[in-house]
Length: 163
Ligand code: HEM
Image (cartoon, rainbow, N blue to C red; front, side, top):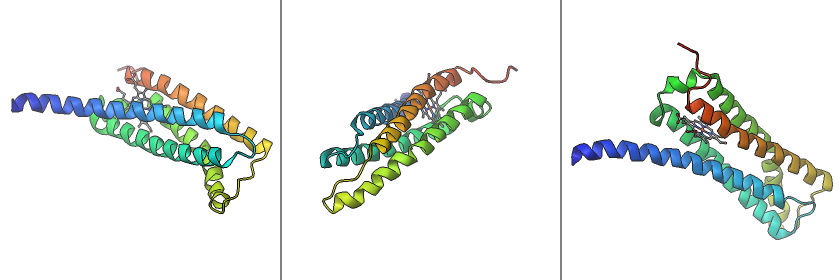
């Protein structure tokens, strides 16, 4: 019985971490898509607050995506070297960091909205700011759409130097 538990527990833990990674990805994508469709010039109070909340969810999911990814590299994957020796892995990490850097602009914009919202006022969002945010979100969505392709290739050893 104890022997069975010793085999099953690591498998279930690894599956849970893998699921956490995939769920975080789904949450990130859903949050970005929602932001993409909610963003508009001079949003009403409800939309502005919703955008702030959705961006917080995005931030938490992006952090969980990173932490579960690191856990897979270090403990629950195919061995750390299997990833770190593959340039596709680093391309994936680079794409994640690039998307993360891009998301700073919308995030800082929403954080600044907290000031008027607290005073009961509405944030001023011009048409050009709304367009810019929409474009940034479009690029982030394409990035998030492409990263799983890099992940699928990397998971199958594509990109590893031939021995
Ligand atoms: C720095 C951040 C990340 C790290 C360190 C990381 C690491 C990993 C690792 C180690 C695996 C397991 C591969 C295997 O089964 O051997 C994996 C799988 C996967 N990752 Fe990530 N990941 C990161 C970010 C992301 C992001 C941003 C996405 C999506 C946008 C993503 C999507 C996936 C998917 C879909 C898989 C499953 C691939 C498959 O088994 O076919 N990862 N990741």
